[in-house]
Length: 250
View: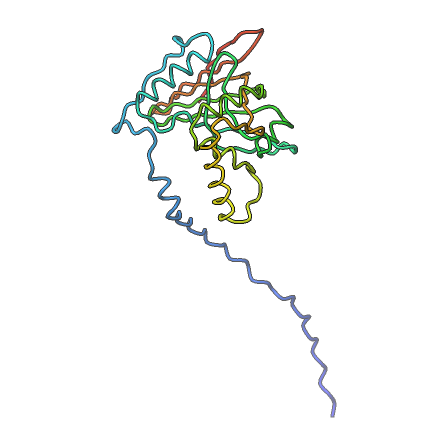
């Protein structure tokens, strides 16, 4: 028999990949309960209290006078702990650090505070003697920011400062070891009990590590909040032995 001629086989077609489907836009995730709680908070609600007006044209020629006036206002308004402030420093690598400390005085030289020389902030100030201070007084919607060189006061100033304060302050200073690693809370309790007893027994005992500092300002900014976000920012900047003032956009 004669075999019929073979038909040519069609060349195999390349596999067709399915067209990618357009991905449906994912619905935005719902904010967490924490974020919703944050968004529900209000700042400077005019229905609760009216913020004072601040006309920068009436500001004094130097910042200390304005600071003491504002401080008197917030004390009269009932602000809680208006003498506490944020103190920002930087370590040897330039990394920032911040904590809350107590204002001890303000005068023509600057803003005063104290701490142990061996604490973290004391070590940082010894290496980089510059600091920033921040005050926030929410009752009146006011902030004050201070930036400048941190200078160490004489030892007798630190001694007088510490012993003008409470027995508890002296006892805390006597405990020492600030910023060091603590092995247990019981160790702190024992050290605190001993320090309290000594502070009561020797009210004039010296604490060599206690150090007084003053931040001598190069800049001081005063911020008056406004419920419609038209905040007033007045900046004092040291120049030619005096001060110049300038308004800043909020």
